[in-house]
Each structure stands twice: as structure tokens, then as C-alpha cells.
Length: 319
Length: 115
Image (cartoon, each protein chain N blue to C red):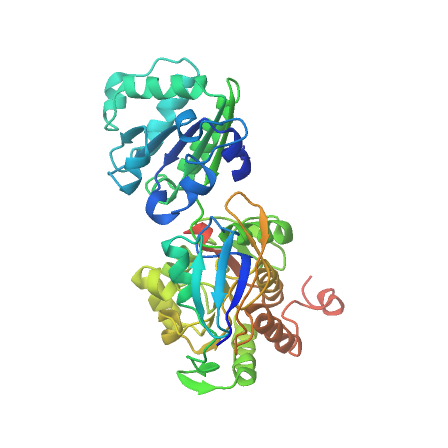
């Protein structure tokens, strides 16, 4: 399973007549998503706006977003993968066991109705949040929902998009992809990139205590990681770049205050649909930008001996 | 007090990255926002250009940025398996520098995506 069938939010606004949110609460976490990009807008091919669109919400509990939905499907916690698998079977017209569907907290008729609506629409989109990608099944859930969207293209136009939380986390994926070939959890210890989520992902490295130094920028793992991970950050030398003195700064050996991204420091940020947008800073900060500080640390590291064996020494010694 | 009005400012609080925000600032603080949601408004109003924190801290004591950069470079250079983590609230330009640093020190580089 690989690849993502996606589009920009502009296309969603102008074309999507079927919008499914899975494991997210945009009403409270992305307050302008409904009004600016999805259900509330009048689009080029949807002159009726909200009336011309169907919105389905799948979640484990009733959130503020339920009020905006036409259909709410309450899934039993941890059963998302089973629901997606049943949907994929129904899309292909395969028989699905009623009892197995009922274990997920839903009824077969509800899923069949959902599949019928998905097939009937002109342009469908699935937005999936951390309620899907960070619960039981994790990246397998994301892969399943992306596959469901891809398979729906045998019937109609269908796309899927993750609801990104932080301002430029989509940018982090993009930059790592074009520099190393992988989107996150990239190990450069051997001088070339290696990718293995679960082994080289931060939470696992920290909980196992595999690292011997940490450089943190644009994050506060000291406030969000599990306790064994925070203990590792306190044990090893940790360096923090942040506009504020954070929880991580308090357990770090070095903290450097930087200017706030987008308010004081210029640059580019990627929206969740991977559209790059320029930032327009308005205030002049007394602190340097993250970019400048990282560049100065690189210059200071450059003055020291390189950690990789030099070519002239590599041929001697070890056979 | 002169108020500057900026059109089409970009909010980097959440993944929506709305780029249609109007900001009113007095040079030190943003005093008013238009079009921003409740999360975006608090993001803009709570970050100022005031000097509220020390330039740098080494072992919890105030220090200069120059010294902090040297100490940071020493720790990172000495480490066998350093971790570069975060990247989600910084610009792409800063992320690119962070990848360059990670390559130089032989680090694992990761963002919030892996959580």
C-alpha cells in the first residue's frame, strides 16, 4: 500500500459534494476548515453551497463537529480499521458478515448506505485526523483509508487528506522528502538516510533511551512525551530553540530564544494540502530566527573534525 | 502610537495555514486581528516583540547566544546518536538548515508526523 490520492483544498471547495471527516473534530481544532474550505462554501460547481454537499462524521464520541454533520457514525474505540475494511469489501460488492460489523458499534445497513452515497457522489473527500492515525492500528489505519479512497476511483472521483495539526508539519514532511527521500523518522547515523518508523521515530527512541543528545526546535516534547521519554531528554544533553522557555527548556542543558515563526520570522509554510504559502511577519523581534541559529550551530560544528572517516583514511587499516 | 495594518498575513497555528488574516500592530504587539479564528487570534495576540525571556540559557543560567551556540555545537558534535526533533512550528527554510545539521552530526531527524 502506498501513494496518496489527494487534491488541494481549493478543489474541495469548488467540487466536493461528499465530505467525510474521520477521527477529527474540526469544529474545535481547525475552526475555519468548514467555513473556508469545505462544507459552508459556495463552490464553482456547487452553487448551492452547504445544501449541495453531504457531510459525514465518523468518531468514537459526539464532539462539537456533530452539529455540522448530516450523518454521524459512532464507532467503538479501536475499531476503525475493521470499519474501513468492511467498507472496502462493500465497495467491491463482497459479502460482509453482519455480526462482524456489529462488533464495531455500527450496523451493516449504515455502512451500505455510506458506500451507496460514496459511489453516488461526483467528487468525494475523506479528511482523517489523529483519532484515526494515532489510535489502535496507527499508520495501518491511515494506509487503509488512503487505499479506500484510491479504490473508490473505480466508481467516481475520490481523494483523501490528513488533517494536519501543527502549522508547518506538512512542510517538515515535504522538506525531509526532497532532502532525504523519506517523510519523517530518518536516520542519518551512517551517512546515508534510513527510514523505519517504530525504530527511528522519536517516541520510540526516547522511551528506549537510544539517543545520546537531542536538538529540539519548534516542539515541546518535555510536555507531551511519555514519562520515560522525558527522563531520556533530561538525562542526555538537550538543546532547545524556542520563542518561549518551555517545559523542554527547563530540563535542557542549552536553551536559545528565537523569534516567532510567521509573526517575526519570514519564510514558507505548507498548508495541510501541501500548498506552500509565504509568511508575512509583522513584528521585529529582538531574538534571532530559528533558521539563523541553526546556521550558526552548523558553522560552529564545521570548525570541528568531521565525524565521518575521511576518504584517505578509509582505505587504510580495516580490510 | 501608530498602528500598522497588514493584509493577507499567514497564520501558522494549525494545519489550515489561513493566509487571509488582517493584523493591526503597534510595533510591539498585535492589537487586533480580522478573519482569524479563536485559536489564530490567541496565537497572534499572545506573541509579542517584547524581550520577555533571556537570549539563551546554559544549564539554567543566562548566557549569550554566541556561548550557547558553541556549547550546543560541542554537545551535538560529541554525540554518537543525536536526535533532531520538532520542525513543526518553524519555517521550511529553518527545516532545511536542520536537515543539513542532522546530516553533519549524523543524527536521526524526525517531526510530529511520527507521533
